[in-house]
Length: 551
Image (cartoon, rainbow, N blue to C red):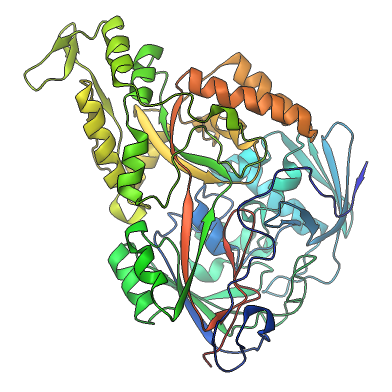
């Protein structure tokens, strides 16, 4: 079957495709309303983010922030817009085999990397082979092409990508920055530098990296030759901005302060407590983006005592007053989660809502049944002289977002009330990653932006092991979860997907493999001198079409 500009029969998302932050009462090239603003070239923009990528290589890093930042450098075969419709980008058309094991792409013939080398079929092969190579140590991109068997160069502008198992979600995956393209030359000469050295980041994107200061900022400058924006993009040519600087400002007060004082033109992750202040500023606008994908969850390692006992896991799940905690920490700006998928994700199971409320009495009863009936001097439960303790590690502060350490304190206090000692040691980032992927912690936490329910396979399929670059943080191996998530990966039929992914969501909760906490929501503050800020399906800002009144 042939797919040219196909439309997925999927549910909608919070952000409409045409969502644009424009100026109101702006000067210069703008006008009195967003719809009348006329793009003008020139000027520079500074945008603040709350966390820095551990690694800037999109083929290696699993972080959302890496993809958000590097979208300025790397393009993809396809583009998934905020309405979850897929469009041609570096590929002009594509064909998919009926079993979703083979994908043939026709490529544009006018694209070049910023080092002057052509984007062609050989470049596609070099990038996919690099992602799949175990030496790359990919933490996420490799899972998007888990059963990849190779890329065939049919001709200079045609590639055939093959998999050993049905891979229907590959079309959406091919639109993500994680499967974006670096110059084959930089892959050959600088692959070991892509994580840490800005100039090594050579893609086909609308910007190039000019400067990088670790822990502080990345400066991008316009790629003057860019003329291959995704189908449907408002700006067909080079970026309007001369330069874009992204500053890393982990401190909430600092980030809000530089935004409200006009030192930056935009900032992501406005803390809920500060939203009213930002919205009261006549020079600023805000937009709230509820991301599709995996909710922020606490993953319970089912292979480690005492979490091997489902009763203990369920006691933790039901012993946290999530409604109260999320409300208290996020001032009503974030929604409490009821399942592993965010509501804007296709195949979200709404029937899970309100089905597992806070129930401290149930938690106490389950722990009693599990034999944790003793109490030590501090009031924690004991069994055979051993305290009921679980370890949930913290990363260094600069890698923590959304005040999750504060939320963790509230959860810690809730679990203490039922006699569980939730320990929160801090590790350097290297130790955290090494021990976490080795399964040496009882609990890990994360959220994941991806408008595709196949995210459930990433987290709960037994083949998605941490040892092979997967993200199965609960280390669960359940035949039914494997069967359903594999079935979802073999089709784009909405009815089948809703069924198998709905069953998956329910079973994850029933097994207490995770505790969904809140729906990730980004509040972005933007100067009213800024125009044309749009967002993709993952709620990440796109700067290719942005222009500013400041010159």
